[in-house]
Image (cartoon, rainbow, N blue to C red; front, top):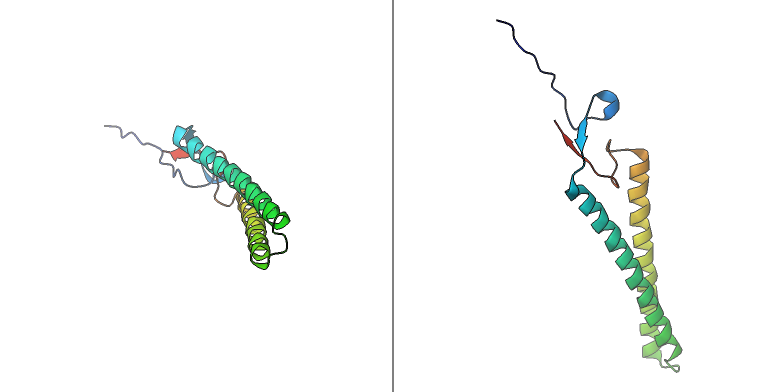
Length: 112
């Protein structure tokens, strides 16, 4: 009796080392879309917080407490913008370098 042999492939390894069969999973695109939306909402909120701090600075009329509060708001807003920009840059850099062997921004779940 002849034995049927099936080819076994590891779905985790990089494509240059083997074949991967992939399918488009809606959960992967939801995760990527959610991350992009959170970055956009975070950017909008940091800009609004920066503008709120600037408005407080303009209307402080020289009061030290209000000036200190306005400076702190503006500093926090710039820190938030820097963190958002850094997270986007890191994700795009990792995606471009292909460290994980798959695209972080176009997720496809490997399947056997």
